[in-house]
Image 1 (cartoon, rainbow, N blue to C red):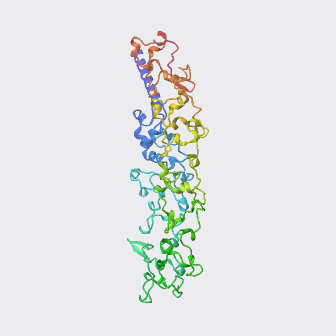
Image 2 (tube, helix red, strand yellow):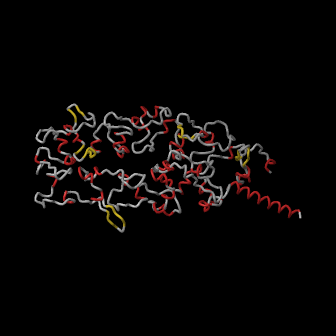
Image 3 (cartoon, helix red, strand yellow):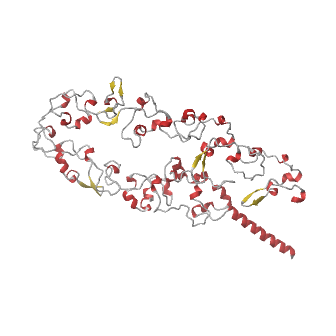
Length: 532
């Protein structure tokens, strides 16, 4: 009877210990989306032994988020999220019905996604836009629902009313408030600027409404306009040719130019490019026979660059960089830039001109005295943090490369601390950029010591404390945390006989002191009767 009672008591104790251990390993059920990872055998799918849940584990599964972070775009690359651990916002083990993705649509700042909601977009429900039909990323269409994968062009969500006949940049004519009227459209920027009586004509007189592909279609492109007779009847029945503008103006057919059959190309200044669209009176202010200077562009045009290209021999003419098709059509090539005092290298070759020559807020383009060193354009974030001997004259190129800022080439041996083993695989930011309790990132360079515990937590809680300088290296190497250098024979209790066959955990058990639980390695009593 006593034996049965002992067996029952043993089974109850074993069951209690199993349940207690399971509770320590799994604090609660995973959310429904992670339910397939349930079970102790799957813990390492998300957790790293001896460490917290790492971002690398999360992003290995959520590759669509990782891809956007690497491209520095989207909400997870915004200043509000960047640098945070995934589990801060998306923790688990709170039950099957727990919603891992939680945010308030009414207070969510959509600007952080890189796409600012404007006008009528501000009044829409999130799911009005975030629909499968609007996704341009085919891989993301396989998901039941996602906020990712939308395009930012108007036509990724809206039907093309113009059926491909106009430019896809809808915002060049329309705004975010309403589709009609097209408040941004300027007819003067088209190939047929409206002049004279044309300004009084209703749009539908020239741009008729048709039916195309079974839908209402307002025809705006492809309207013939090369000759007046494309729209107007020729009352002269072709007796004077079809070029009505030789004699008439847009003001009225009854107003004569008096310039019959004049061909400007017969002069020593043939009209080319935009000069063909300029009214005669713009150049010929007095009369058509008074000679006007025309050898250089600046005989008529003001020097927009205000003497920036003036040399000892005189000003450089506009035609050296521009052509008659418009000042925006410049001919200054990359090859020519390489002949300047600042040849472009690396990422600078992909930088648009305005980024350097028309900085934000500047009214005019600048081509002189805009700087030559990195710090003339880029903020020196390491100022006061890194000793100047490691980058003399604050020259960023001492460590960084012109292709990408995060490609750092620095000889760490110069600091007196040679990187070995796993340390060689870490990025500079892993050790030198730390997040404080307020969530702000701070730089640490000169303040760091070479002690292991400067960066790593002492999981032994001072049991092996002798000197703070690299005491971990007596047992551990730089490759990983396995104590490959540890030899029990060098301790006060060399292992002999059957002791060599016993698992470490049989003697070195976890203990709890206050709020801290750790493995006890410094056993205070080695006598036989202390264990047996």
